[in-house]
Amino acid sequence: MRQFKMSILILLLTVASTYAASHPDFTGQWKLDLDASDNMDDFAKSQGASWVEYKLIGNMPVTQIITQSENNITITIENMIKKRTEVMVPNGLIEEKKNEQGNLMKVRSFWSEDGSVLVTIIDTKMADEKPGQVVIRRSLSQDGETMFQDIEIVPEKGQRFAAKRVFRKIGVTRDKK
View 1 (cartoon, rainbow, N blue to C red):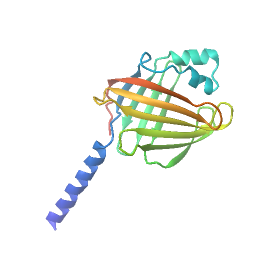
View 2: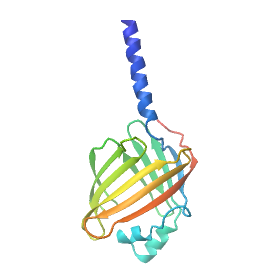
View 3: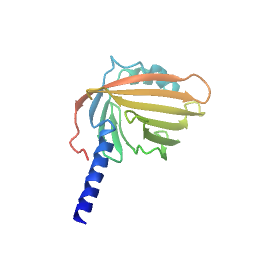
View 4: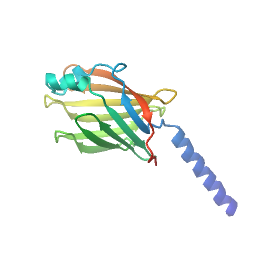
């Protein structure tokens, strides 16, 4: 009986370590590299930003502080104007949340089939009040020091927008779970 319990324990530890190793660990502090990133003016315009807002957004330093556990990923996004925190559960299930304007969004996060990309799909209203999707794909460079964030805006009708943002790792958070 004791040998059976030990075999089960070893099996569980093996499965847990395989799961953890199959996904990149985004834990850390990430600073936006504006020079390596695409211009976000068109994105800001598509979301109804004024000229002043989109010029400011496009040149503003952004830091993302990410803490990743087995069950969720917490991302705190900071810039000179505001700070907001999002918690994602990458299980593929739809969660209803409200955006900063108070509109209802349906958010779904999951790992890509090969486990290397964190995908978030947000069904929401665009600036023109028509439905659309925002798709965000996060991945890491091979050395884990650069995070790529591919953003795609898919309005129900109209022009799609895509941009790549590049973040450089500047530290690791201490409270990793």
